[in-house]
Amino acid sequence: MTDTLVLGAGMVGVSTALALQESGHQVVLLDRKAPGRETSYGNAGFIQTEAVEPYPFPRSLREILSVVFKRGNDVDWRMRDIPQLAWPLWRYFSQSAPAPYASTVAAYSKLILRASEDHARFIGPAGADDLIVRQGWRAVYRTQAKFEAAAARAERLKQSFGVPSNIYGADELSADEPALRRRLAGSVHWTSPWTCRNPGELVARYAALFVARGGTLISADAMSLQQSGAGWRVQSEDGALVAQNAVVALGPWSPALLKTFGYRIPMVFKRGYHRHFAGKDGPRISTLDIENSTVIAPMNRGWRVLTGAHMAPPGTAPAARQIRRSVDAAHELFALGEPIEDTPWSGYRPCMPDMLPVAGPSRHKGLWFHFGHGHQGFTLGPTTAFLLAEQMNGVSTNPLALPLLPAARDWARGQMRT
Image 1 (cartoon, helix red, strand yellow):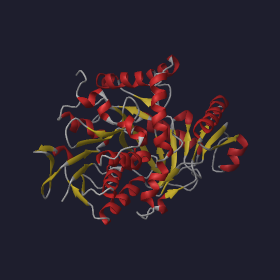
Image 2 (cartoon, helix red, strand yellow):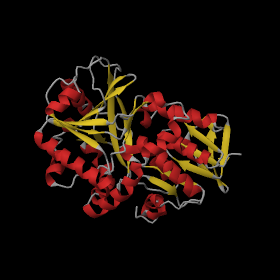
Image 3 (tube, helix red, strand yellow):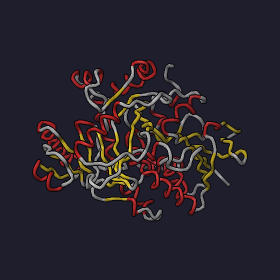
Image 4 (tube, one colour):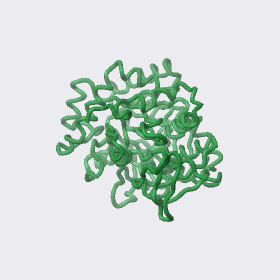
């Protein structure tokens, strides 16, 4: 008999289903689409074990003015969206101050550093080794000042967290990446991360593993979730499903569902864009052009060019500025071919103001939260899933789980002023 419904079949939801299944739960995983076809499909495919410091909100006046006047390609925004964005962005700004940010890094880094180990528990059994490349990724720098600052930061992360990297000057970078079309100042090669040549397919194979182990995957609308006596019910094409527990793992769609139960979740929505290109002369390994906030990632489908963050509420129309600039930057560095898609893909990164994912109980009995991973849902899905499973089984002695409990957050307790 089903005891847990997991709502959402992206990386976070599928990992949740697998982790709960391993710990003895009878799980039904549900989504309106096939696994890995929404947010998890569109990322750069990084399992980012070097990302021990999450992206803070800019604090210096120079950085803030750069965002306000859209001088770079890292952030885009529209004036008409500001009323919906202002409150969560203010909380994001506040949580990025030195003291709270240091607390966030202390918890976040412990999660990130174990991410590849947790993915490994699924990759082999799911038959997905052919999708994984264990060669790290490279950040490249066009200016000497940016390169020197990055090299210093890489050394600091190596000393503080044990994150390995190789620093390449202009000549070494040219030799290591012969497809580059222009000379750059240098690069930082983060050697520990893994990359995936088809992120959506990796999620699909994890879901197939869940089914092969006896789990149930169904098509259903998560927005139909309702309380049913002491449990929770959703409506599927084959009728109603009822279980003792429901885990909301809907990424950027989580706030809309939970609003019906009285939760006002201060999520920051960062929209990203990508487009695939044909050709044979892309980078040897995934490459981030820092000054243009552009990733060029080798994928099975072609070279995936990805953008920075567009601050935009769900449902707003896509914007072309960032992807256009990213494509131009990518072509400056590599001789990419013609675009494969007619139009770019876009999707949302579900970010929380304190930059920590939410994984724990709500104030409703049997309703659990698992969302808000920001830029790292693909990386951290399995890690926080295992921690959530410990909490649901009442055996959580792992201190990593403690900062993630939404019960410690005012909005989750329902005590936040609305």
